[in-house]
Image (cartoon, rainbow, N blue to C red; front, top):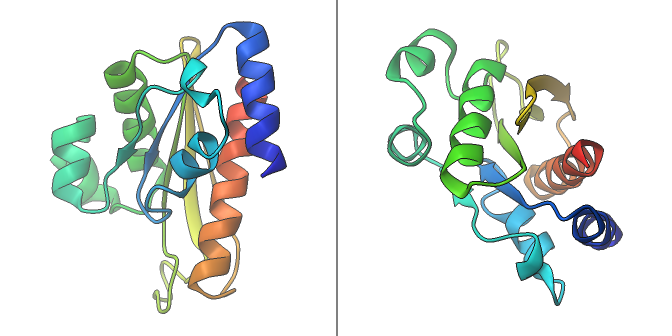
Length: 154
């Protein structure tokens, strides 16, 4: 994947490392990065935290945040990214939590994905409505967007 190759090139040139905290993408961001030979120079570990308990145990997401906002929220994505940044001792961390489908609700429709990007200078977050593209396409769109966010951090 060109985005992952660009990320590897840019991170190596900058001497930076990256990590990811994934929910709905289930490890696709980590896989895209580690599919490339030499990725160990920029990527040591990632986190697949599909269940809320995993988000809490591995990344330090607060139960209160999950209760107040739900797993698919910018608030949770921000805590996921912050936790991954610290746990991996990386320079940049991206977090993804969303509704890949099928399904969803009126309040949180299929295709809604919340992202966060954490660096030493802070955390940014956003929500993108990818639409009801189907599970595989939502996961692919989310993976690509997460890689673009990591590129933007470098």
